[in-house]
Length: 212
Image 1: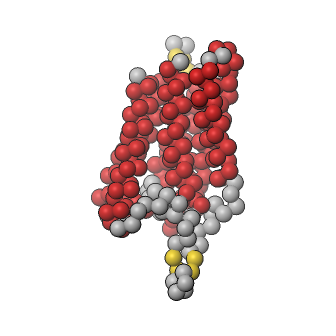
Image 2 (image 1 turned 120 degrees about the vertical axis):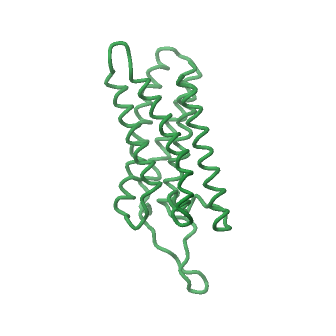
Image 3 (image 1 turned 180 degrees about the vertical axis):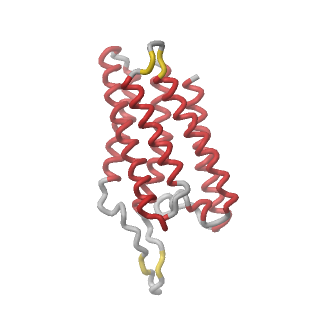
């Protein structure tokens, strides 16, 4: 059941990313640049009907969160450690959905959700990393090295991005004609997309652990 939910979460998120690229290309005649286009811009600057692609993000998040609820449930009630994981998963999903709708005109709200999205991911991956090491120390199963490497990479990469001093730099630049244009990179936009891809990668770790 949990493996099936993780696979569905991955599938829905892949569909969401594919449709985002397709829709953005269709309406702007330019490729979706994950470095300077924000997730909410895929539908908001084009046509409200495009918001329907976010249904796949909802579905992916629902499958993801369901896994943690199932994992938290036990015969003797709810274990504290698993409840913490479920709470962190809920925070990640809520912030993920929020950044798909909150425009930059509400910068404070958008940045808060994006920041919590990344911090929640770091916290959950750190928590999972400790768990991975605990399981590995008991079973000595080399397959456990896969989720350990994945979770460690997630923590390190996420920390590098969230601590970048240019994270809130949203200024446009001037081209050779003196016209204001988007820079090649909005660090905040890149971080949001990166965390979405990390969200996808974390499901692979979950599948590996579930198979052991």
